[in-house]
Structures are given as C-alpha cells and as structure tokens.
Image (cartoon, rainbow, N blue to C red):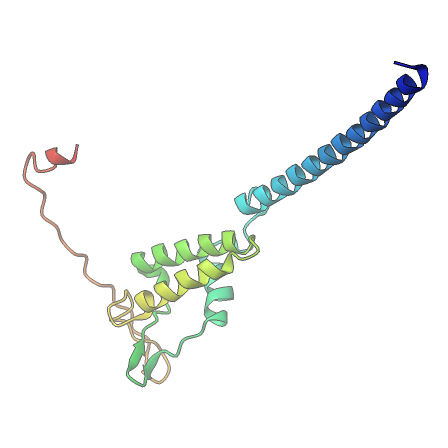
Length: 169
C-alpha cells in the first residue's frame, strides 16, 4: 500500500467516524427529547402534578355538570327526566356522580380524554335521571309544586346457604 492510499483511507475513515459521531449525537438528542415528552405525558395522564379542578363532587355537580348539561325536568314529549335537588341523599347518585367527577378530572388532562368521558356521561345520565333512576320518586320544585324528596326503600337479600360459595374458590 502506498503512502497516498494510506493517507486517503485514513481521511475517509476520519470523515466516516465524524459522520457517525454526529449521527450518534443527533440520535441521542432525539431519544432525550422523546423521553422528556413521554415523561410529561405520563405526569399529565397520571394527574400527579395536577390537583383536581373541583375539590368535591358537590362543587363539580353544581358548578360544572348541571350548568353545562342541563336537562328539562318534567314532561318533555314522551320522555321524563327526574332530578332531586337533594341528590346527595341518594347513595346511588352519589356513587355514579363521584365516578363521573373522577373520570372528568382525569379526562380533562388528556388531549382527547373528553371523548370517552362524554360517552360515559351519555350512558350515566339516563340511568340517573330516568324513570327507573334514583330520583324517580322525588319531585322537583317549580311547575310541579313544592319539592319532595323521597328515598327509595333498600332492596333486601337473603343470606346464601352454607357452603353455597364453595364453587367460587
């Protein structure tokens, strides 16, 4: 091998090494950017860094839910929507509304989080305010007269016979 060939090979190797070093640096920077973006999304999705916007389910129901998603209470065509101004007395309603509130607090932090949350709301509202919902025997004030709150009787259950649940294990 001649001296000029050796010089050229060293120069090519040095150039190639410089190019590879630059490519490694570019890829390392890209990895760092992606890790940073993923960490930020993770914190937003977890809600670890974000306190709830509403401090209680009551605040969320009265400040957000009722004004944002009003439903006509009373007769509307063939549909009847029921609401109880003392909704907090109904365990089922509190459970469903709390779940909606928790879901909403998480959904608001995600770019498209409201889409699945709205589907859940569309499922829960007819259950809460429908003819078989927890407010079915309560009457709202206004056109229907004085507000009336009635709690539904709790359903009863018999205890299962001894050894009934053995198959479960």
